[in-house]
Length: 82
Length: 212
Ligand SMILES: [Zn+2]
Image (cartoon, rainbow over all chains, first blue to last red):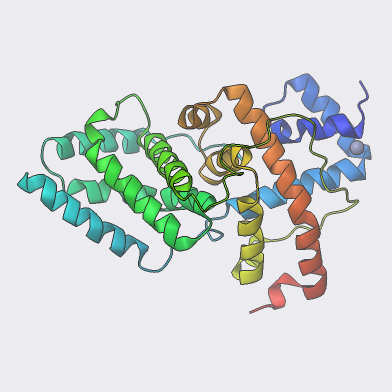
């Protein structure tokens, strides 16, 4: 089965998650072998997801934990005394 | 991109801690939430868009979690429960802020039409070391923050917090097929926005390793 680039794009997410059926996966793979456009889109999408999901992108502000636990302490003390 | 298997020891440990907290050892709450601080903060930040408000929302969410701990159902995952509390807190906060533009809250575009990715012939891998650069980090933060809400929250939960499709559906009260469609769109939207930006950084700097 031969598919167009546009249809390959619909499969990108499932392809990356490994949730395509065996048949769909093979169709996409065969397309990727000869289509540099779709291969580059797939590679860049994977790359973008990995970078965005990196813990360093949204780091906790300095002192976040200390302030949080101090505030929780007030709450915990109140709950114990009540 | 595949969610890690939940660690059964961790889940059991959490259940034991929750039972102890409810029995009066409230100090254990500190320990219970420590592994979840970052996830809650990131969820809040992807909504509030500034660190001070995000921190406030995160603190409120943890306080609410403590006050409502007795309503936590053991068959749910503690992290998923925390995330939905955070989400509600962030949404309420945005609604209360009358001066905030509300377009990203209620009038979100529904799924329809297709997202066309950025077209390119070859892609030179941007290594994770690039994140040491503040400009790259900000580029990624901005891209996530600019996603319409319905896509953003799915992306944050699935790809940043590693929740499964089912857990994401549960946390957001949407169907599993919706999670999949929205995740796909979110990923392509990010690709579309970030590929040209990342490319321009990588061509002007040539080598990622020469920075420091
Ligand atoms: Zn193609």
